[in-house]
Length: 195
Image 1 (cartoon, rainbow, N blue to C red):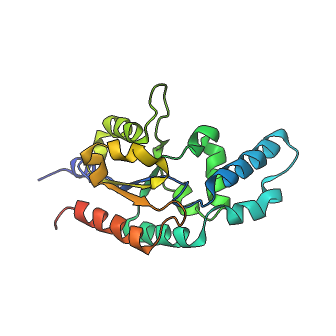
Image 2 (cartoon, one colour; image 1 turned 45 degrees about the vertical axis):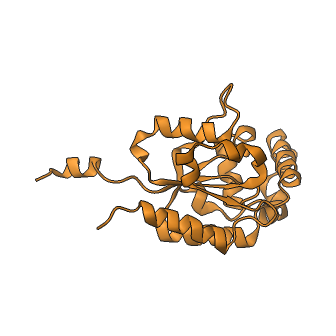
């Protein structure tokens, strides 16, 4: 029989969603990324406050994709790792504020300890960034799904087969809809151990 501590160590990790923001939750991403960058710059300089940009935060993420993501979160109690380029522009504390003020508090509260993929030198392709993250987190096993957009173009054609099997791509001009959410749901259900 296993001792209490031994059974704790053998627990399956919470399912992880590698989450891209642009094209999944943020529509019109380039303009909105610029808006966030300008707002954060003003806040850091002390010429405005977070509340001064409330309208920007409220309009940052599209309502339907948030609703779909929240339903997935409620069903699977997900953890998140951000794959977005925004993680290279904003430090973690700023990203947490942006997520919370923009209606994604449930994502901010459930970021993995290593909250974003590494954008290290020489690692350009998102698929390589995710593979490197997984290599350093072997405890995650296969309890993960990637939610991305096709905005990356030809890059997605070169994804490793194992990674592609865990990935759902959204159409970047509509984001996460019920169709893609159902595909994510199916992938997480396939990953659950049989009881």
